[in-house]
Length: 427
Ligand code: SF4
Image (tube, rainbow, N blue to C red; front, side):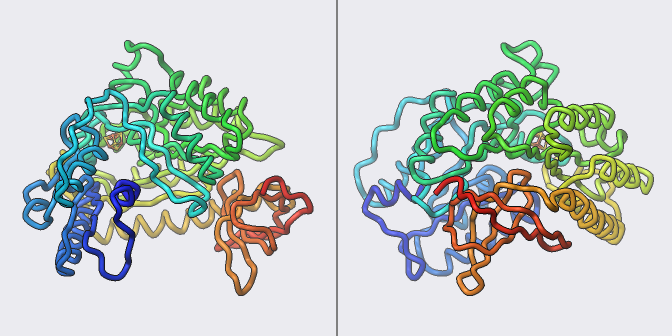
């Protein structure tokens, strides 16, 4: 979006912009409320407000009432094209002829600024039709689309040329890459299966010269397959980290959530991941999402979630209190008392600290690769992530974006400290 504006002669300004874009989210009721407030705030500044993002799909009337120009996700014209078209209208330029509709996700138009971020997100897939009972996304992003291998490689090459060292594949349901459905039982009848498409894409992008790290943002458990793990093992720049949402450790709750796996299947997949990606006794980093206090979740269900978390030994758990999302099936069910939800969240957050410390303790004395991301100019302390996703703090005179060998010296609840070794791997 920024590049579309810059191409038309506009400059970013934090002080008194003529145009503000509010890119909204509405995945939870709270996110929708924040989006509403953000539009109101922008509007109070008396500027022209463009509203984009999911809120325009879930609350189109409110978006139209509050914002000046609303760009919905609906329709077949890719969002960036619609945006460019509306910007031209706002600038009172002749409207550009719309581009032919593409069945592939559009290649992004220079979405980043050189050197600004070490990591870049690259969206390879959009849409979900899995209909988990707590989630609104299938109602607003119904059509599944995937970026072609050629477009993805071209975009990744461009990101690397702009100075990004790490690329993260993102999407709504990445495991459905190359498929028209996220429903696994239906995928079995489509061409290609078991993560083949995604594995091919990983193989292709990993070959790009200068790409130090490639990461997958989140995978549904059923899509982590031997062929995908083979691609991770074969390409040394694909990091040994997977984000594998559990949501609940109780089969009864998983069923109510309409998730596409049960606890045994999840644990089998974890065993396979550990077996394939453990190197020198260090297991891969596994992170997860867990929803606490889903309607019908009993103390026993919650205890099972705690048990599974301890068994998997996550590096990090993103813990979410269940929040009602209007328009979903679960919103119509009896909700748990808020103090019960709060208490369960607290218990999981404490467990998260404990498990994270235990995982990171395995790094002590080991040599890790750290990608330097942020520095404190006063202390010369740099922060960055190692290949196992733990955030590492170390003192160094090296520069942002450099990849260093370092030895982990100490872990605490809050940090993982390391000492730089002599070799600088890249600059
Ligand atoms: S898999 Fe479930 S939670 Fe994820 S986007 Fe689809 S419906 Fe939502």
